[in-house]
Amino acid sequence: MNICHLSPYFSSAVEQPAASNRRSGVTSERVVLLVLSVLLAAAVIALGVTLYENTQTKKSLQKLQDEATNLTDETCPRCEDGWEPHGGKCYFFSSVRLSWTQSTTQCKSMRGDLVVINNREEQRFLQSRVIEQMDKSEDMFWIGLTDSQKEGVWLWVDNSRLDPRLTFWRKGEPDNWKGNDSDGQDCVRMGNKGGAMDLQSWFDRSCKSPQKSVCEKPEKA
Image 1 (spheres, rainbow, N blue to C red):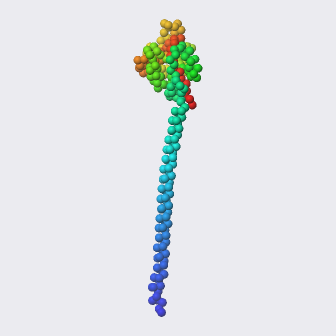
Image 2: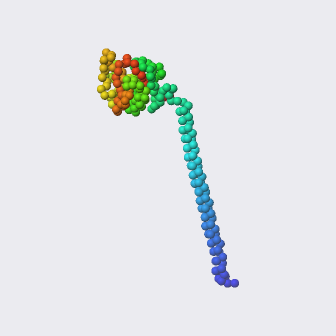
Image 3: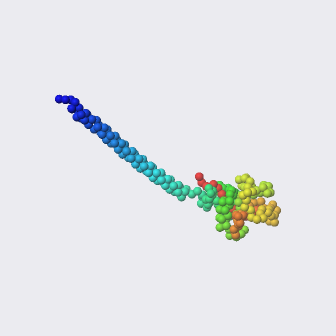
């Protein structure tokens, strides 16, 4: 037999398994890639589900916290009976007419003091509440401001000096009128039944004059 005549067939037989092996290798790679793709997709889906569940859990916890806070506010009032909460403080509007010194004592007996007005918003709140409780124009309320130590030097009951940029004197006030008291008018009351332009509702008055008063103290912690 002539081997030369057989060589083409022999070569073809050798090449066929090699081609088959290459196709098998390509197929295996595709399978691996497919499996990896499926696993990656599953991981992404699982991560998305986890993130969604975490978000929902946080929302639920926040809702429970808000409900707990509201429940605490309802069950634990910030101010005692008769006191009104506003801006982190409690206010008591006394209808008992006393001198300025007696009013200070009354406030202290309730663990407070005559009100110290720190800003326009507080003045606005007090003015609106005082008007509601005034029966007539002279039915005013003591606040914690006096110049009894030195005329013209106005001090609050906490010994802080009155800021001249934050005053609410009625036009023409203070006048230190001595018609009813030779000592003059060294204490301040507030109120304007008909409404006050630019919140100007402070009047100096004899400290001996009986007036209603406004006490304040911090809200409960």
